[in-house]
Every structure is written in C-alpha cells, then in structure tokens.
Image (tube, rainbow, N blue to C red; front, side, top):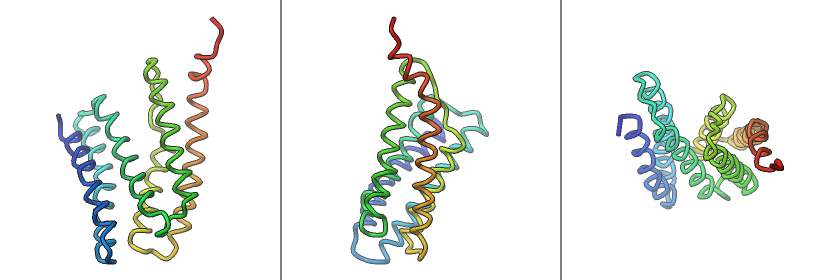
Length: 174
C-alpha cells in the first residue's frame, strides 16, 4: 500500500459521504456535496501525479484508480437525474463506462492492455467539471453536460477502434 493507492481508497470512502450530502434537503448541503465532489475529483489528479513522480505506479493502482472515477461519476449521475442531469445523458455516460470497462477487462484477461488514452482522460475531466457545475447550480451546466456526453461517445468510439482487433481474435476460426 503506497500513498497514491491510499489516496484512491480515501476517494472511494468519500463517495458515500458525497451521496449523503447530495440527498440532504438543503441547498447548503448540495453545495457541500459539490465541494466533496471537487475534492474527490481533484485528488484523482493528485494520486496520479504522485504515482508518476515518485515511480509508485502499481498494477493495483492502475486497476483501482479508474474504478474510483467510475464509481464517483456514476453515483453522481444517478442521484442527479431530474436534478439538473437529464436521464438520457446519464444513461449514455454510464452505459459507455460499463461497456468500455468491461471490454478493456476482457482483453486484459488475455494479456492485452489498452492504456487510458488522452481522450479518455479528457472525457473524465469534462464529466467531472460538468457534474460539479450541476452541483453548484451553474446556469449553463447543460452545455457542459452536453460536451461531456459528446466526448464520452467520441472516446467510446476511440476505445472500440483500439479494442476491435483483440475482440475479433476470439471470433477467428481455429
């Protein structure tokens, strides 16, 4: 257990606390949920920076860090449906996360690793910024959510193009 992995565990631990604040019936608590979300989102960059800088990158960290991101974004989107996040947007983002993560894990089991792309990282940042803007009640948050959805779809296509050759290997006649 190293510092970056510990930070990732703390991020995961803070997700239920974020949800509790999100569910409390006051604008003040909604804002607090936004602050917690921002802290958890920001520490995603911090743990990655520390891991790279101090050469503490582990297989466990490579696995757990994106899971923490997906848990945070998925939880936020589910609990924000009808409260600033249209259901169709939440569905597209969550469906993409499950699809691409599942496919990446299936090819990883066969020894093929599809590393996170800059487009996937940009997608995650855009999603987190958009969700934060919804949480704090930013007036034009819909357009940021729309940008997140567009990047989500584009990054899904990018990952599918990278995964496709490995997925086809299973279908070849031997």
